[in-house]
Length: 379
Image (cartoon, rainbow, N blue to C red; front, top):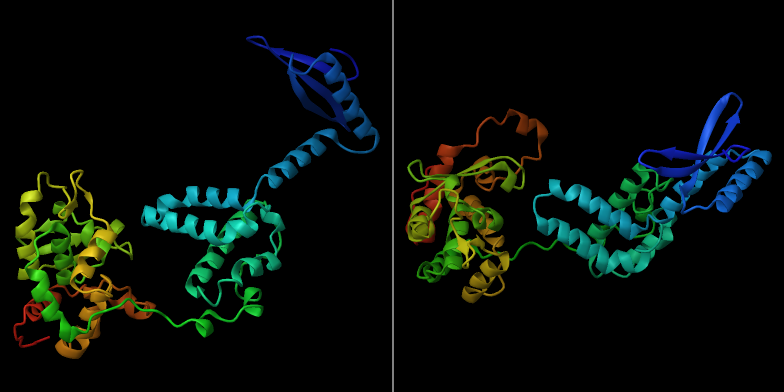
């Protein structure tokens, strides 16, 4: 003990540190001043003396030290740092790595140049205007996503105590007062889709293609599936005897398992690629030597080689139009085939079936239609 509350504490196996001991009322406090010999006796005395001066001024030195540390930590919480922390802590719950990359890419392109190095507690409505105004009318959909992602990051910061007050990225009551509504400045752009009447001619060109990308495209169209669902299909999901493909919930957009009845044309595609199977859980449509999932770009290139200007997802619209205008099948059957979520919560609560057997008929008719055969619809 050096006196006046300064103590050198020695702990096995020889670790030593300086402590300043003092009382407030009947409560005793121990305030660390640093390890010895990194902090010399002279330095420890100086620090203890500074603590005594604070006490004489009515300031609790330990509380002041903690507040200073918290303030410094807050200064280290720039928007860029907090955004990265948010992505790391949440990406495990996102559907795929692509989503995390999109988050980072949009913030890097539009948010970081303006607010990336600002402390999260300093970001204001003016900063949000600087981020969004240059792209709100020209890249409205992107701007809307950027706004939502900034709002989420700032909410995350607020929950952790790194900022206080209103969230300047919030739409209602904030940005809605300074920016025109999204719907007023940009029309909804739908995926480019083929008219249902043109589908059989397109299928005739596609049917003679044997490359794995074309086989994947065939299977995607025949099952009205999303690109990622078809590209990620594994043999363990396929029941050839039951003519059924069961997609697990973790690979579905709605996070619920989805059963897809396989028509004869889809089964023929599986027959054509079965030699690529080596293990029960192998990919149905593997890409390259490493047998990885075929990329969305690879599938799009195959499509554009046959008909430029279309999108893979657009064929789901082609299928839906055919269901309504040609097949005249009930809405709930078509929506179930597309694995769409029912937005009517009351109606959804009473839905207890996925209409599998009725969808078998529908998908069989779809396969026949693509091959140019006349179909007697009996939905």
